[in-house]
Image 1 (cartoon, rainbow, N blue to C red):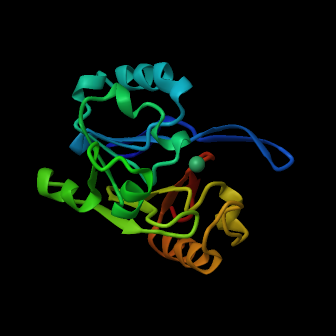
Image 2 (tube, rainbow, N blue to C red; image 1 turned 120 degrees about the vertical axis):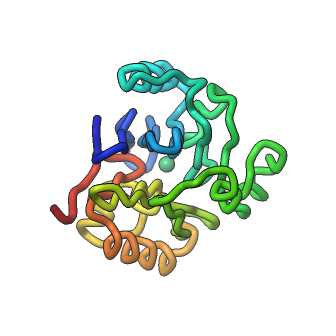
Length: 195
Ligand SMILES: [Zn+2]
């Protein structure tokens, strides 16, 4: 699914709950064509669907040059292994996950790529060291991760159900609202705020 020029949603984020129990969680997966970069990689059972979606755009997994993970929860990193490229995340997440060797701090992304039109913003609240990716194309797209897990978080100004810092979470939502024409929530379909 095309979000805007050069920005594609390979997989819609999902979240199924049974009361407080999460039955299934898998993140949205976005492909930024210009830099051949994925934002998040879903849950591990979604790898096949992600490959098929890439192939429909004329790419294969080996064409993917980088993955930016909004954070390192496993419903966002499930198919990382499929791609033999550098993976980027916030330093706090890398530290917390104890996987320093396989992830690079997100600032490094800009040293490897001439990523004009791409910005990474810090959007803590759901967890510490959460980042969102802003793509300035014909629209301004914010790939929000779990700063905005569901459309309702943005529309009704409610923090993510799972959060470590409520105030920070609300600041992150406010910032995303100010920037975005289109928001891609972590676990929901894209939401157009401005045409
Ligand atoms: Zn998530």
